[in-house]
Each structure stands twice: as C-alpha cells, then as structure tokens.
Image 1 (tube, rainbow, N blue to C red):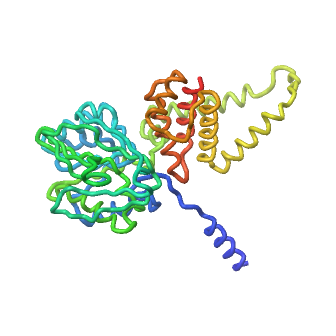
Image 2: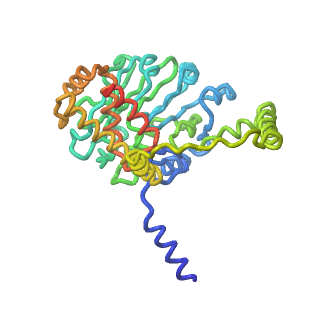
Image 3: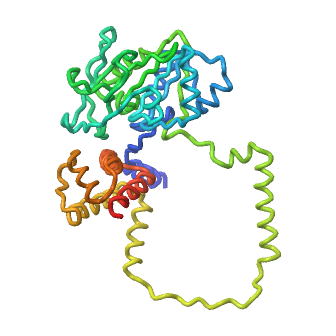
Length: 380
C-alpha cells in the first residue's frame, strides 16, 4: 500500500508542468513571480521597506506623512485617474516614484509628456541585450533568452528635465527603456522591462546584476513603499469579504437567503400540470463542436484555443483580403486596416496581442476573449 501511494505521488509530480503565467506576485516562486527580488530587497533595505497592499490613494490618504520611494512593477499597471493624481501630488512634494511597466497607460504619457513605441526582440535573434548608463554601477550587459518578444521603449520624452538611465540593444541604437524625470521637488523613474524583477530573469546567467543596478537608484536612507497590490497574481480579497465587512451589506445578504428559503418552502409546489417537453431535432455538428470546445476548456488549453483563432484569422486575411501574412510590418497592418475598414490602432493592438500570446506557454481566458473581440472588428 505504501509503495502504491509513493508511485502515485511520484507520477503526479512527474507530470506537473511549469507555470509560465506572468504573476509578478511577491509570494510566488514560479518563473514569472517576484519572490527572489522581494526577499533580496528586504535584506537590502531592512526596516525601511514597507509592503503596501492597498491602492496608492487609500494608502497615502491613511498615511499623509509618508515620505520616500514608492515602487511598482508589473507587466501592465493601470492606476486610473484618482490613484495617478494622488501619486503625482505625492511625488511633487519631494518623494520618488519608481514604475516598471511594459507599457504605460495613456494618462501617464499625457501627464509626463512621454511617448512609447514597440519593437520585436526577434530583431536581435532570440536574445535581448540590456544595459545601464550609470558608470558607477557598471553591471554586466545581460543576455536574456526570452519568451515574450514584444518590447516597448521611449519614443520621445522631455530631454531637458529627463535623464536616460538604461537601454535595449546597443547604446548607439537609442532604444531607451529606463529614464528619470524631474517632477516638482521629486523624481519619477520609468522602466519598461518589468521582467527584470522576476525569478526567471534573476536566475539566468548574470542577470541579477542588472536588477541590483535598478534597485541602486532607490534611496536607501528613506522609506521604501513596495507595492504588492498591482500584481497579476496578487490575492484578491473577494466580494464576500467586502460584504462581511459592512453590516448593511451583510444583513441584505442574509435577507436574500432567508427570502429564497421561504419561497422554496411555500411556493415550491407545482400549481399546474407539467407541460410536456418537445425535444428539438439534434444538430450533430453543433454537438461535435461543443464537445471539442468543452474538451479544450476542461483541459484549460486557452492558448490552443487562441492559436486556432489566430490560424483562422490568417486564413481569412489570405482568402478574403488577399494579403500575404508572412510579414507583419507596418505596411501590412495598414493594408489590413484599409481592406477591413478598421482603424489602424485596432489592427496594431491585435497583432501586438498575437505576438504576446505566442510568447507564453499558457495564457488566461481573458486573453482569449480580448483576442476574439479584436478579430471580430476585422471580420465584421
């Protein structure tokens, strides 16, 4: 019996797949979690480092005397108008704001006068060179064998009040991905490669020297507010906890269940003879399609579903728009937009999403829905 149980456990562990979900959560030890950098930051900053689990508006409102550096990193961060306004006001008073994000939301670009552009790291074969311009740090150039091919760099920014701190590719290429902006009495650090904070990145070659170089820009003499809220893998409180925290919501929730219980007791009996159900003729094609779809969903093969959508899209472009799909450059996207009577911005977002999906081993179902929505704009 013991041997049989051991073999079952061993077989289960042998079939476990690596989870490539871009979590960025500080407690996750998966490749794209940030457990390692969080632990190293605690050693580096000591009791100056404070984990923040609330939004910036809530935390800074509750702690009006907070002073130091606020650190954010995730592949996509959307602060929203209220949180961003609170952060910028706080920075303007003499604090520092450090944001590492693949692409910054439009409100940040408008507020800080920056523009982003994307390029494919396939231009550098299967590797990307990272570097920092601060000669006092002197980290080694890091070669990253990446699964995510889309990269964003700064297309334009205020060169008078800004300082370039890092780049992609070679220094001469001007593919800047790390800048410092003077904002009021404070500073804003903007970095477009948040994967530098992941476990996978830090354990590859000498990449950890690059991450330590990024952290060296944080003032160790002041408090460091380390955000744990804006992370893809952050644990949500859930709606039930919010309901339980409010007596009014809690009693409303109880009354709903009491009402349902009473309805079942007094109104549960039939008041008329049952109406016979006439079964419609079965459509075997729909049954087969549903069976295949259910199989993919049950196995959580969201990426496979996305790839089927992408293959059908490419076939549609070739057979209906009469375009060659082997090269996805700007000219190709403009032709797709023109022939499908769709805006170029929507077409560009679609191919960025396709490139992003292709780079991951697994994706979340939300990505499939987003892909389907953009494809329908072209096929309308």
